[in-house]
Length: 179
Image (cartoon, rainbow, N blue to C red; front, side, top):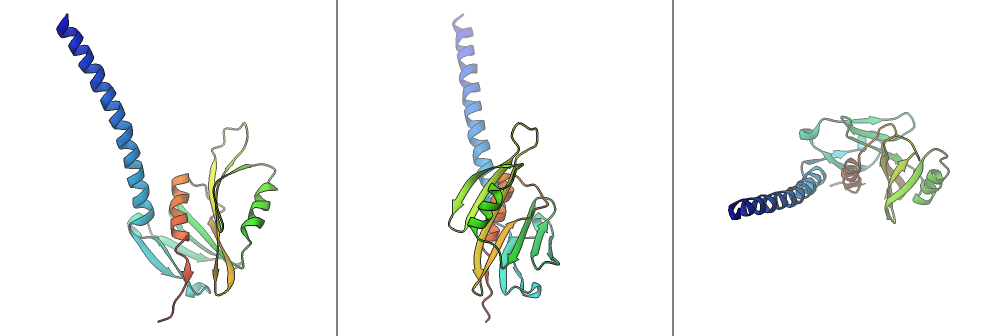
């Protein structure tokens, strides 16, 4: 009987320890994966050929080939497969104007996950529906003295983790320094 009790206690302790370590490792693995997605393997793209005197760092080819397209309305869309899509819009709108636009949306409810002076990350949901939430970001910066907006591509849906990686990339947008 004593041996059976010890065996049961050892099993319970082992299971509790394994469950605790599993969730910790999973959490750490997720953080490591997120950091790798956001900081490692970036390459710089010169946007001069798209009429913007700037550069931006995007994930390198190990995560997929970046496609850069100039739109008819003057923006630049950079996408990689279906997990990364940002749009750079010269002569963009301000954070306040974007918030007003989001508030006026009659279909989606918006929750701001990050609010900084020149950046918002938000989640859009439709109340009482089975539609998955959408995560997006909107950022402003100045290039050549003009307001430029950088945002998640509007025609794609992203996870929070993907948007965080795109924000990391968007923060590298800077005026090109001629040597």
